[in-house]
Amino acid sequence: MRGRIISVANQKGGVGKTTTSINLSACLAQAGKKVLVIDIDPQANTTSGLGLDKSAVEASLYEVIVGEKRLDEAIHRTDVDRLYLLPAKVELAGAEIELIDHEEREYILKRMLVDLKYAYDFIIIDCPPSLNVLTVNALTASDSVLVPIQCEYFALEGLGQLMYTISLVRKRLNKKLAIEGIVFTMYDPRTNLSADVVNEVRNNFEEHVYDSVIPRSVRLSEAPSYGLPITKYDPKSKGSDAYRALAEEVINRTFGLGGAG
Image 1 (cartoon, rainbow, N blue to C red):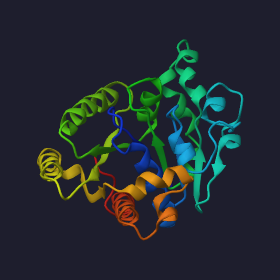
Image 2: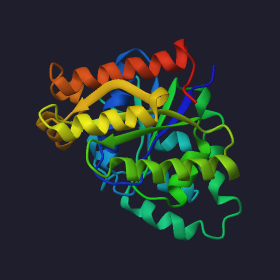
Image 3: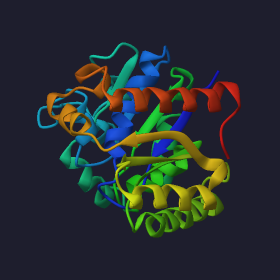
């Protein structure tokens, strides 16, 4: 059975995209699934957030793209059982220039994952917060897009831009690309704004919105600096509970109810 490839994407920065990539992946693995995380963001925050020193990684996605390493050489184990990482490094930012004359450059990642998707239950791709060749590669290679949105005033504006991007990719590069789901991050139950954003997004995208809501949490913010997902850093925290619940929803949509589309 082939694994499900999910891009975690939002063109807005600071919405909890990397936090979601790290913690959703860890929770899927802890639920018994074999998971590969691909860090396709040159900032490499998912890489360091899962315990790898991004300045010392010798075999990363960059080396695979430019042909210096084989894919299997660049996949690293993490401290979480069943969770593997294809790391990024800052040099990945130069890949866009190096690929400018590459024929069908939007399909490079998709070709890399042709066989790999049968080795994992889930492949989670952490995208850069911009629409560049790397992000387009991720969306072209994916079955679906998981969209984290922060509970803030401009959330719907950013969501609209992303939906337009997804429709363009679907039209030109990947007809099967679906919306996996929208997850609210940094939710503060003490503010009316958070509740208003949740209600408005649910009204507009009802069938795509996850029930799980990720709270604003100091513990979630601290965990990456220790190279740990929240379930390892503070397993009894509200953040751990929220990402476990999200992982359960993702598993149910994939293996129970079928992928959201």
